[in-house]
Image 1 (cartoon, rainbow, N blue to C red):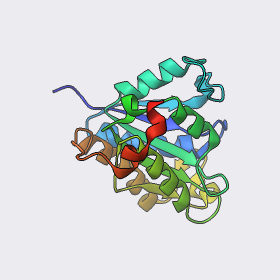
Image 2 (cartoon, rainbow, N blue to C red):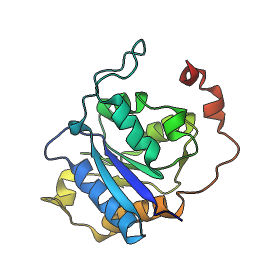
Image 3 (cartoon, rainbow, N blue to C red):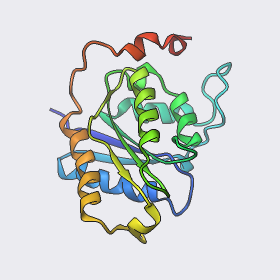
Length: 192
């Protein structure tokens, strides 16, 4: 059996991104569970705002292939106005059922304020509409600026929760989700 490959997508363009720092802990958990890992930094891709009239814009094919080749994907986002980042939304719009269908997906959010639950709910809905299998366990880092010292997460409980997200991505990477989700059956726009 091939080694499980877990990809973590950084849904932030900031240089000092707490999302990026947190995702590294998730990938540590995946590596500890025996996976190969890859941090996908959206700053490294030319992904113009999606125009559905055109195929293969910028680095969209390269990005979609990375997602398609992964056994599991962890999506990380900062919380903006109660939801996930626009840059992550745009990147996900370049993907579809081919990349996410029946793929295991983990979710992580960081917030300047209290609990970033709505961003996680919104990402869960998007992934379910693509017929991905979203891990029940998710990770969130509230009041993120006080949770880190540099790139180091200070709270052992949060670190364990984030590392568990990575481990779960490996453990459930080959789960066979059946039947398709209600959301994916209703996602007629994905077939356009």
